Length: 147
Image 1 (spheres, rainbow, N blue to C red):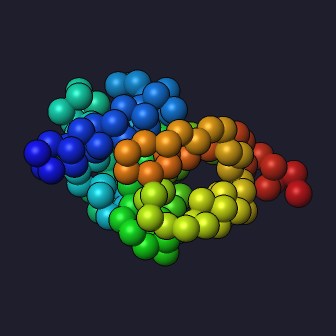
Image 2: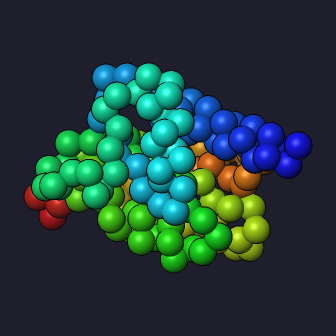
């Protein structure tokens, strides 16, 4: 029964991430974090074929429209995952991040981290496994060139 609860919680997170990012089968998706392989398998099982992890891609070409991060207990792992996938993400990117419910005060730190990376927070949804936070970035490279 406990195993069923874990699977159900994981599926709820995947559903929430898909909904918040408006993920379609045509979009390239980069995933990272401690639970990235479970997320990868869940997305493949649902028919999303353009899904990759940083280890699967040889050269970061900023061509992925969606980023999904499912970390484990440590806040540093989420920040590291964001740094790891950022070279693969396009200028117009939407991301969703699972923040473990056991991490006190971490959502504020991640929000600050995202804003420093040029993202604007769009929504946050509570799930069984924590908080799924979504954010978007629109045309960062154009702003950097203008500065």
